[in-house]
Amino acid sequence: MEDINLFDELKQMAQNATEDAGSFTDEEPSTDQIARWQHLFHHSRTDAAKHIKQQRNDLNRHRVSDYHWKYVQLDKEAAGYDREAYEHDLQLAVDRALHPLTPEEAPDTASYLFKLTPLLASAAAIQTAFDLPTAPAVRHGAESEAGFVRFAEVDGRTKNAIKAYLHEADPTLRSMFIRICKAAKDFSSTSSHPTLGVESSLPQHRLSCRDAEHLPAQNEFPVWYFFYGSLADDARLSRLLGVAEAGVVLKGARVAGGVLTRWGDYKALVDGPADAWVDGVAFEVRDQEQEDALRVYETEAYEVVRCGISVDGSGGRVQGCTFRHVASVWK
Picture 1 (cartoon, rainbow, N blue to C red):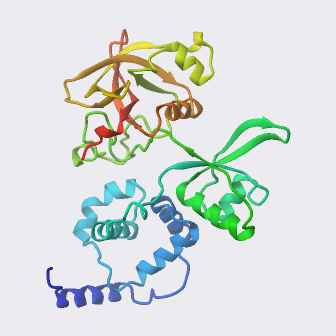
Picture 2: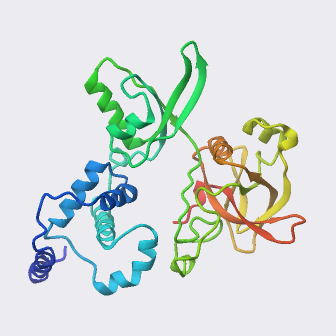
């Protein structure tokens, strides 16, 4: 183990104390600062304020140099960070490297449908009770004698908070959660990540200016999708999306940068060389509801990635999406 340089540690503490002189206070961070940390680190409002104050009052924390911040500032501010949030993000990365989580401690990244109850009867009630930055989406289930069953879509952290909240209110209550197994979709706004066949988190794939934009965006609709297996069938898509078969228009298409392999009885698209091509069909997904149905069909064994789709007869290429098997994720 390397010896700690006491002089450097004392120097860092003195710098932090000097730069933060007069800031040791219980004053609440601003609304914008709290909202930033809620969005970036998935904290509740209360936890975000607590972590901001803890960081500001920690004399042992390490700061990035002015040169370091100037080098990354454009990309980081475009992603929603300020210097303080960026330093916190770096510290979290160091903590994870030094103290890796066990499988039992790892955060629950799945999504769940929570059946609304009299104690938590609406999305607004859940947002208020657990300091969520936005109200969860509400889904309607099958109709019963009491009307439609309503569910709120929540993440793993909120699920655990709801269970604790309801148990404290009434230990006899039984909450209902349904795990949603759907393909992940997490498009970066500052780089082309994730893109089929490309290690798109590398610097050369980042935005070169604030006005540039990588397409398609996370919630852009309508959007073209490339299908290569069971989804390349108009009858199946008709049933899955709940539309007339005549309304399912599939066009011959191909994508570069991928290869097909087998996952059990199914075809699975994985990353391949830049000059590798896969033939299939292109379909224009109309809205979020249609995309959600496709993501649930493919399950969490796949993820949505960006790709360039060459559509037959168009004479060009459109930027769209496809489903990549998770085993292909770059290491």
